[in-house]
Image (cartoon, rainbow, N blue to C red; front, side, top):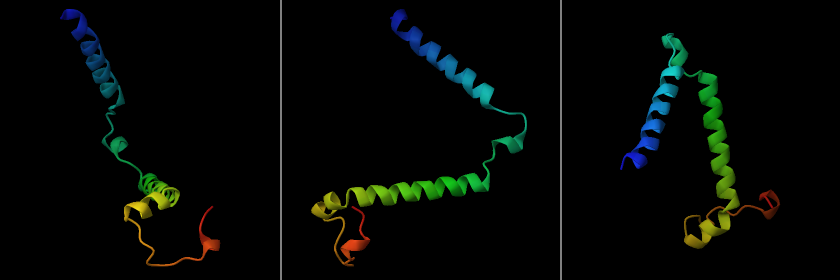
Length: 78
C-alpha cells in the first residue's frame, strides 16, 4: 500500500510547491488585465464560430441548426 500512495503524495507536494511559488506578495499582481480578458473572450468566440462552421452538416443532421436564414453559397466557407 505504501508503494502506491507515495507517487500521489509526491504529486500533491509538488502541486503545493508550485502553488506557493505562483503566489505573489503584491495583491495587484493576481488580477488579470482587462485587455487580456477581452482578448481571451474574443478568441473563444472565434473558436466557437469556427467549430460551428466546421460541424454545420453534423449539427443540421441532428436538428440543432435549421435552415431558417438561407445564405448564398458564395458566402459560406468551403
